[in-house]
Image (cartoon, rainbow, N blue to C red):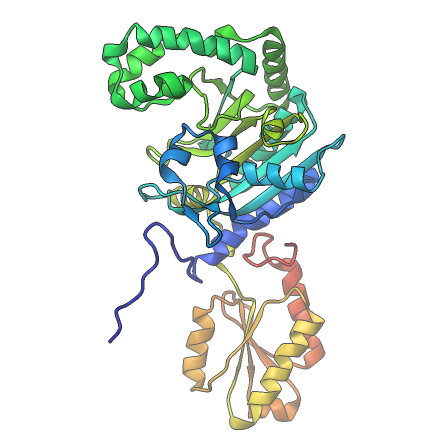
Length: 438
């Protein structure tokens, strides 16, 4: 026998019994983006490697260690996208979306990083992201944060996450601060680990993000970037805090929050949770006013964020915040008994789908006893079974059985059946897995 082929480590299958939970999450995302007037953009998963080197920064873990990079048949270096922002910026520049324009965009899809797989963190993972171009005030920063907060409220997560904010200031202020930071760490070189020493000349701000417990006291005593901000960045940060206060969004200022990508400036933020152990960040972003120009476009203010879908779904499951309706995929299971009912059963299924587009219907195929069909109907998690036998066929009716409630079994003519199921569509919980509102 041939050896079994298996999925690549850290790249997982989404099995049918789990897909309704993803659809439940995605439904909330789509409705939220529509509420705020954000438009969806889809970009390729494969880009030129230079795009990520120029945007993320060559001296970052993502570029140095984690990207899936290869030369194609033409000898061009290509990479699977490790994050979404660079691709959206590239597409916006290439398609002329940025000159004297504003755009509120969102995306969803798989990203790829070759890192050690662990719970909630995989080599192929999925993100939902927001990117906003052409607006430079703190009002749009606050709106982006408010949008994410509204999603947490809709999912029941708002009491389980915390917003952390910081400002990285302007590029000039950050360069001046960097010199101060390098001087400080050089004075304590003997306390730096190997990774921090490597970053000292190339990316010293990332040392502040170190998780090494032996360095925490040293990092805590380091000069704070927020004390070295330029006046315009201070005003921007104060404006953001004022708006978050007015919106009733609680936050803490984390002066060590620098984010892992080189393109951020001014506002940076993270939503974190303590419910997932060390993998506490579920959403992160900030302002990246210099990135469009860095990638060949005209200088354009921009802000955005990305959230990890696997991590958020794990959080929903950990906190038992998945509504039972999100696990349902069917409303009606059609079943029949007798050789002459197979075709009428298919016809009835198509009739119900045509008359009631919001109804989720599955027709039993393959025959079998009434008892075995009823077991499959129950296992399908459908609310109703509709049964068609020789007697119903002769009478021009169908039998409706309530599989989840106490409604008595009824034999109904076609129009009466359609009326009853139409009422069920109106009564059905709003968060049912496959919603026609998508």
